[in-house]
Image (cartoon, rainbow, N blue to C red):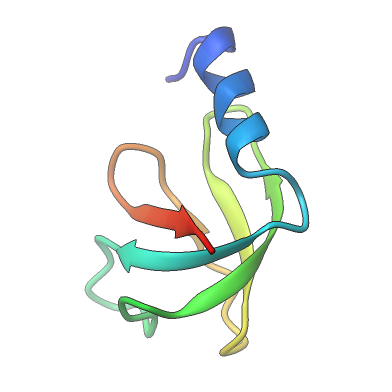
Length: 71
């Protein structure tokens, strides 16, 4: 679990409405692939970044497991 300072930093780095590109996702059943893009909807209290992916998916990016970057 993230401490308060790291969570605040994550929320500042990925504000709601910002655009992200997927780098990697540790989900063998998911349909997302690297370079998919989407819009940040929210970040929950454990640091999962919820994204409205352009492909229609809504899978979250799990802190410490998956990776994305701002575009």
